[in-house]
Structure formats: structure tokens, C-alpha cells
Image (cartoon, rainbow, N blue to C red; front, side, top):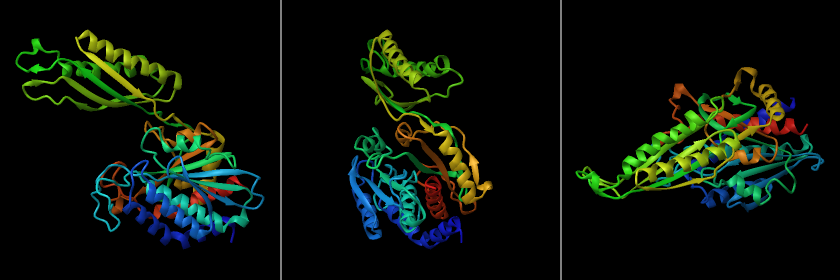
Length: 395
């Protein structure tokens, strides 16, 4: 049996454990920065396997170390995130979330299970590679400033110094058994807008005596779209969305203020900075011109994600070796954001998509929805592939 067959055979023996781990994590989700029990569960799994690790990095983060022969030869990392979302699950499954209002609706239970599985496999395969694999269990991907940035600040990419890093993310639109890659710029940066428009409240029947913040806010929402439609380079993807507006008046009440939230995403740092200045200028000038005021705060979020060309091209080749050429697909650029991007700004990185859908079984719900679920066959595929990508890097 060759090494690939050995990895596939070992993964098959681990599949029932992977399913049990994922179902435990799914049933006990924790929000960003609150992953204490999740981290404790992972730590217990690592202890049972005799894997050395360090806890409480950047919050509840964990870094495990798997050493092969000649451990100083090369150091690489695999990353999985652990946090859940504030969503009430609607699935009728035995592993349904036990924590009301909290759900693994973004597949982080899958990500954590796969990197844990890779750690267990690499521990068994340590005689087959030279170098060291660092397994990063990351908290707080879903909330700024992002657990990745905090773990990096606390030295997770050092001792030993990580030379490359690989991560994966579920993609329910992709059938289980398939994966997708994209080299170069892959996912957008993400900034958050918080806008408060203040006017003068009054009776809806006598608007001349008020300063209507609803009307002001409406003009601001429309005008902000000019930042993308008339200021951005048309060849550079940019998205500006206002997703929340609270006026809190009534049919005959003009409120004192309107509160709005939104997101801005793009792929160019100079343009990103320029656009945010324009947003603030537009919002404040419109409000002032209409007799009100505007406080526009933009919280700087994750950078754009760039997959290293060489590492990703190699990963595509290695994935085809492991899964078959027909199961490795190209990935389009995405305006979604991920704090794995912080790792990609530090070391050569590859972040790819793991198919988790199954149309025949009705497993098609998108991420961040209360009916999201996965075809659990993806666990063995994701675990085996991450293990294979680590081994091939260390050859």
C-alpha cells in the first residue's frame, strides 16, 4: 500500500469518530470569544492522543504540535475555526443545538473536526514525514477583530516559525466529494459601518416643524452607492450594503434619530482607505445640508484574502492526486470575508472550499441560515485531504 492509500485507509477507520466529534460540537455551539467548553473538548481529545498543545492563545485558541522525523526541517500549519453564530437552529436532528439562539450555521464544527482529525492522522503517520505540523484551533472568526489577528499577535505563527498555512471552508453549493480552489486574490476585505443620523422629531402631519432623520437617512443610503458606482474602478470588485435601518417612529411620528449599519468590501487597500473617507464625507455633508447631523463610524475589519500562487497551484495538483481530477474544481472570486486573511498576509497561505452539499438528501441550505447542515461524508474527505496536503508539503 502506498502512502495515499495508507492515509485513505486510516481516515476510513477514523470516520465514525469524526462524525461523533462533529455532532458533539454541533450540539454544543458557542459564540465568538466564548468557546471555553469547545476548547476544553478539543484539549481532551488531544490529551487522549498524546499530542502536545498550548491553550488560551488569543482567547480560547489552541495550537497543537505534531513532529515527524527531523522536526526542524520544515514547519507548516493547518487551521480550523471553532465559533458559532447567533442563530436558532430549525433542523430536526439528534445533534440539534442544545444552546438556544446559538448554532454552527457556518460549518466551523466541520472545520474543527477536520483539523482535529488531521492531527490524529498525522500523529499516527509521524514516521512518514520530516518536519513539524502546527494545528491551529482558532476562536472568534465571526467577530471583529477576529481570532486570527489575536492569535498572530500572541505568536501562534512562531515557536516554531510557520512557513505555510492551509485552511478550508464548507461550501454547501458544492456536492460532497468535491473541493474548489482559487489562486491569488480570493476573498474580500470587510469593514463595518455604523451610522447615526440625528434630526428633530415631531408630528408626521407637520413636517415643517421637524428635521426628518428618516428622509436624511434615505438620501444617505442612496448617495453612498455612488462610492461604488461612480468612484470605484469598474474593474475592481467592491460592495457597499446597508443592511440595518432603525427609525423607531410611527405612522404619525417623525423620530429624533435613525440608526444604520452596513458593510463595505473590496480587494485593494489604497482604494479601501479612500472609499471609507468618501463614505464619511458623503454621509455627514448630506445630513448637514438637510439640517441634521450624522455620526458615521467605520470599524476596520479583515483584510482581503490572497492565496499564494505557488502553494495553491501545488495544492490543486495534490488534491487531484488524492480525490481525482474530476473532483477538484476552480473557484470564483468571492465578496465574502474570512479572518484567515490575516494568516495570508503573514505567510504563504491556501484557503480552499470543501463540498458539503447533497441535493438528493435535501442538504442544500446556505451557510448562516437556521436549516444549514452538511453531508457528513465530507468529514472524512476534509480530514484526509488536509492530511494529504500536509504530507505532500513536507516531502
